Image (cartoon, rainbow, N blue to C red; front, top):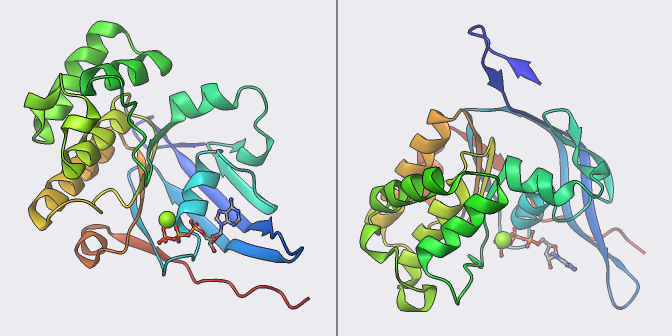
Length: 233
Ligand SMILES: Nc1ncnc2c1ncn2[C@@H]1O[C@H](COP(=O)(O)OP(=O)(O)OP(=O)(O)O)[C@@H](O)[C@H]1O
Ligand SMILES: [Mg+2]
């Protein structure tokens, strides 16, 4: 963990010799991700780039402790993410904001109800969660959609709602997997601007997996991943 000159706490991420492999149905091993090293601090905004299958989603899922590494080290704020036990869900709810590729909004709840549930899981008070949720939805241009269900939104509106939900509790680690994939150029810029502003306001570390050159240009740092060849049998 780090402390700035002004005494504020700064989130920090360390990765060393990280590997994720999967056993294939034919018995061979597929390499999903290899990353030698990475050190990053809160307030940084990083593009995770590389061709399809290079491990961008795998890296974000490892960082959210949704999956465990096959080898190497991955830690956030001194917490070894490969060793999280029963406290894993609580850790994720407080530390991580995740916009996943599938968006995962609950279909039977309105946008506001989706956000209120996220607020409750992360321990926010109801009044504070409602106020911030409304402000975030307005900032992302979907203030009028708070009462709509995901099925009543366009794909781009759903993506913006997923972004708003992920950053509701100002988590120190914000992971966004292709957050602009369903958006036109103007809405992509709005989503990226709001994500960058919010992460900077709360000194959060932001990682954005993306193929979009316009998005990559907006992020000061890039981690380019390569597709790994399977080891010879
Ligand atoms: N649960 C799994 N079981 C087996 N293989 C997997 C699993 N999850 C991912 N992989 C493999 O790991 C590799 C990396 O996948 P990943 O989803 O991280 O790629 P990506 O860079 O996010 O690709 P895209 O740009 O298409 O989203 C792929 O070859 C994929 O098939
Ligand atoms: Mg992916």
